[in-house]
Structure formats: C-alpha cells, structure tokens
Amino acid sequence: MKKPVLPKFSQECVLCNCNEINDRMDNACFSEDSITDDLYQQEFFECEFKNVSIHTKMISCLFADVIFDHCDLSNACFSESVFRRCIFRNCRMTGIDFSDCSFTDVTMHDSLALLANLNQTTWKMQNGNKCVFRKLPSIM
Image 1 (cartoon, rainbow, N blue to C red):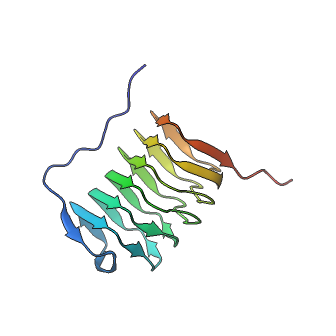
Image 2: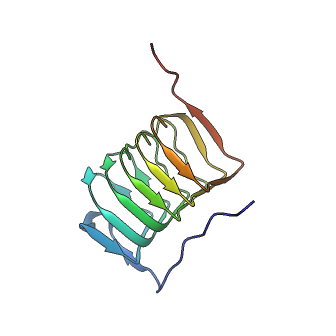
C-alpha cells in the first residue's frame, strides 16, 4: 500500500502571531497562540500550528504542507476547506466540522475527534495511528 506524501517545507518557518493572518500565509509558524476571528478563503502554505487553539470558523480555506501539532480544534468549523499533505499530531478535535472538506495525503496521529461532522468529505491517501473518530449520527 502506498503511503501518503508528507508535508514539504522549502524554507524555515517564521514565527508569526495569529492576529497577523492575511489572505495567504507562507512559511509561517504559529505557536502558543489562539485564532479568535473567523477566517474565510485563507491560504496556508508550508505552515505549522503548534499548541494553537482554534474554536472559530475557517471556512473554504486551503491548507497545503501544514502541520497541526498539539492543537485544540474543538468545535472549530473547517467546512468546505481543502487539506493537502497535512499532519494532525496529538490534536483535540471534539465537535469539529469537516463537512464538505477534501483531504489528500493527510496523516493523523494520536488525535481525538469525537462527534466530528464528516458529511460529504472526500479522502485520498489518508493515514492514521491511534486516532478516535466518531461522527455525528444522521437524523432522519
């Protein structure tokens, strides 16, 4: 079985503040911070989020070559976002909304995603280790 492609970084990440996020972020490292504003159609290339809390909306965003390490993403809304060559490591994702998202070459390790909304997601080459995913039950 073919393994997912891992994120690639062309240069060293520059430490940034979550309040400084603009339309396109390249080689940015966010650490020990939190995103408090809703974000729409942002692009993140070769970025790292370490010990970052995100409990807001990040709708229709693009994440390419991004690492989420020890992040609290509980109740965050990432609907209609695209994740390419991303790693989620030791993340708390209880109640996360990944509806209508696309995942390509995404790796998840030691993460918890209880009550995750995974409706209409597409997955290509995902890899997981010690992860718990339980999606919301369908209501008819």
